[in-house]
Amino acid sequence: MKLILLGPPGAGKGTQAVRIEENYGCIQLSTGDMLRAAVAAGSEIGREAKEIMARGELVPDAVVVKIISDRIDEPDCSSGFILDGFPRNVTQAQALDDMLTDKNLKLDAVVEIAVDDGILISRIEKRALETQGGPRDDDNAESLKKRLSVYHEQTAPLIKYYKEKGVLRSVDGMADIDNVSKQIEEVLKQR
Ligand code: AMP
Image 1 (cartoon, protein in one colour):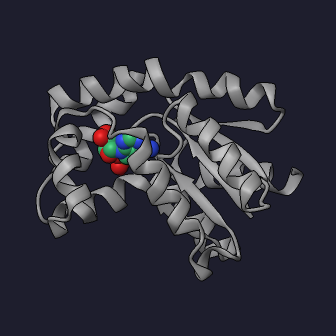
Image 2 (spheres, rainbow, N blue to C red; image 1 turned 30 degrees about the vertical axis):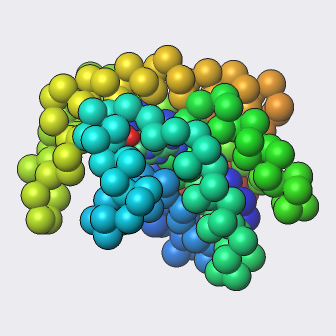
């Protein structure tokens, strides 16, 4: 199973990816997690990404495209993967299309987890309070506002992009976590 989870920050992509990972044996590939690990390790990519991430802006396309391409080549991705937080704009989506063609792979589905902005803000405030080891650098009011505007301007156009390709499936992300998981299961059964 190869799928994309699409949705705004705080939509529950990470939570649902972990559940899909357990049920289908495919690997969650979160560019946000990979970049945070690079920042923590102080690598060259991490040093480049740190401030950009803290501001809630997007890290350069070439950086994330390479991270994902290299990661998909790892043996543990052969049973499938869930892209969480990638692609984030049309340029990345086109790069992903080319990359998958080159690797002779095909997406099974793109699942949009739809949530209104008002709910996202309170969810992220809650996450900031609950995160062990303290909140993420970008879980504060200013970055959050930026991340939501980046989502609407750059990432939301992917809904149309994948709708036109006939692979988009949407679920109601405002339902509780178990219900969202059920909706995703239904969508994946139908594919
Ligand atoms: P996330 O954990 O998905 O909310 O991502 C946290 C931050 O990492 C984002 O606000 C961006 O700064 C950066 N990031 C994650 N994924 C991408 C991506 N695909 N393209 C560019 N920047 C990204």
